[in-house]
View 1: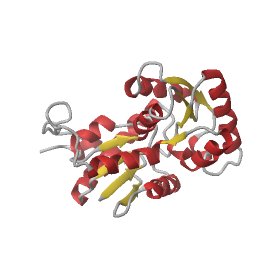
View 2: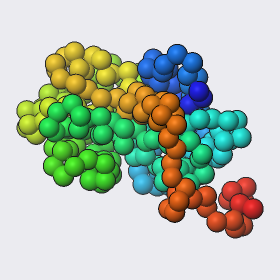
View 3: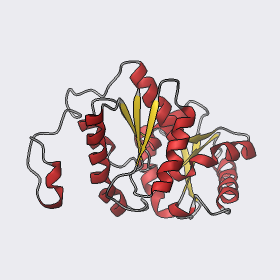
Length: 243
């Protein structure tokens, strides 16, 4: 089984971190490939970044189809391009926010999200409304540490632990969801400090894709997620034309 874990930003060191998190939970016989797109933003911290990450992401899904990939993880908590990727992939495609929030609802009556910048909290709430039962997401908290600092800043772990502890107390939640792929390596330490389940979406999405492939399940192509209609694209998007 081949699972492509696509980091929609272009920072290779973050892709390596994401790939390690995915490989740590992959089962026997599962090959995990961490993928860095050839184009896109260095990090995704705005709607603008997210929109411009999608072409590079979709190009990597298309490349995965040619390489025989069985499924895909979109390793950004905004789940950019998720619906579009499902239209062009034969196998299952799962976003890390989607997987983490679904997993969290199985572990407690409510969860809180700890994410990066405050400007991204609205997007996380939008996704919670899509993925989780009403009221399951008790709150979204921002540590206000930029994505590219997560890997190297020693202040990250204590800040995330402190914020998660506050979220548990004020929200009355039972589970913490880490709201950035760059936080994947913090999962065990945060859980140990708090004594509650802490969900890393990269690991959760990898296991979910693996399970769907094992079950022989794919995205339905009956209607909305059918292949996109053939048409020409122009300018910088010419290579995305479909025939």
